[in-house]
Length: 171
Image (cartoon, rainbow, N blue to C red; front, side, top):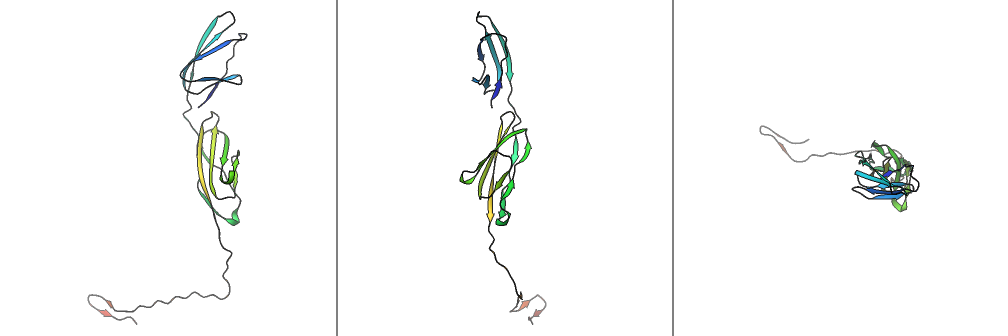
């Protein structure tokens, strides 16, 4: 979990200090917080005057949920497209990995090579979910049946069938 904190102040060249349960790191004009909780920001100007403000950072409890079922296909159906079934979450981006170094940043991919494919999704709050699927290709041989083929079956019973009151011999 990471959250961006943006500081807006009218103080020229302020000295900023944070105090809280997690690390607060500078990140391109904003600050990153990696632990939920209550933080204090102190802004100090060049005259050593300072002001402190408390704020809460909450954890996103709604991680995204996705499903990717295993897939089997015959060679005639290749390539085939697949995308994850999104159960919940406001998905912001996708990242697939698969056999032979396959990777893709799209929601939908084309499956051609058998193997395990893994997707990681990222929601708008940077929470992630991961799911994998197994893709199998079933090869059918090019065989055909033609002509006047007949299917026949012979059933032959030998022996004696006995019941308590009668004895019968098969015909």
